[in-house]
Structure formats: structure tokens, C-alpha cells
Length: 205
Image (cartoon, rainbow, N blue to C red; front, top):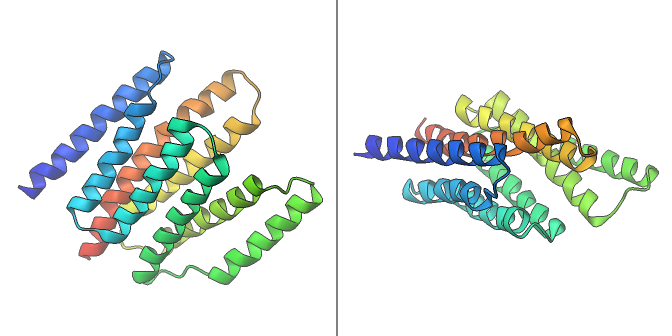
């Protein structure tokens, strides 16, 4: 029975994924369809009684609501993503990862110094810097210490998504801009599905 529900989850996510990829190609507004994919991951985590991951997806829902559906209040939206990464850090730490917290703090301080030198220090850039350092740290931790390669791959795709988000905000309109905009959710939903399913494997090891 549980195996069937696992298959239903994959099937529903696949349908959602293909629908918004097709919609994006034709310029449709697919925000609600994309959001439904994250809601489904949250429901899956609740169903599996995976409390920490359910918390991470609950925070992700808030962040995506702000950034995707409202498309406003960016500092608040990214701040909730910071909480998501700190939740994942706690989850990975439970499973004997080596988060190298001091290294993260050092890199953050260097990043702040760089922002000061470039005169780019503002609340959004600071929050984005702290978020991305923790995302990279969690990705490296999952690759080196996690027994779930599925979860590690999810974090890698998460990084790919956020690289595309960064390019989306930096590039002028054009072909490359369109490609990275399309690729944001091309990477993002699979990353969330893999993290959701991979965390279950890690708990079962």
C-alpha cells in the first residue's frame, strides 16, 4: 500500500512538472502549478511523519508563497529560505555530517567584506549571502557524509536552481536570460522531490 502511494507521489509530481514546463514554454502563468508541487512534497513529509523535513517544507511553502506567488518582500522570502537551510543543517547534523560551521562563518565574514568593498551591502544581499553559503555547506555535507545519494543530488540541483536565479537577476533581457529563467524551476522541483524522498532513505538507514 505504501509503495503504491510512493508511486502516486512520483506520478503526480511528474504531471505537475511536465505541465509547468510546457506552460513556461508558451508563456503561461504557471505559478500555482509550481506551488502545488511544493505543497505535495510537504504533504508527503507529513504523511511519512518526517517531522524535521516537514518543517523544512513548511518554511519552503512560506518562502515560495512570498517569492513566487506574491513576487514581493524579497528579504522576508529569502530569510525563510535561510531557516529552511538551517533546518536541513540540523537534519544532516543528526546523521553525522560534518557541517564545518566555523568555515561557514569565515566565508560569510569574507563575503560581507567583499560586499562592503564593492559598496553592495544591503539587507537583501546580506541575507542572500548567508543563505547561499549555508546551501553550499549543506550540499557539500550531503555529498561527503550522507548515506542518501538521492538527497545529495537534490541539494546539487538546488544549487543549480539558485545559480539560475542569480543569473536571472543579473542578466539583461535576451536569449540567455530566457534560458536561465526557464531552468530555475527545471532544477527546483526535482531538487525538492529528491530531498523529500532522499531524507526518507536516510532515516531508514
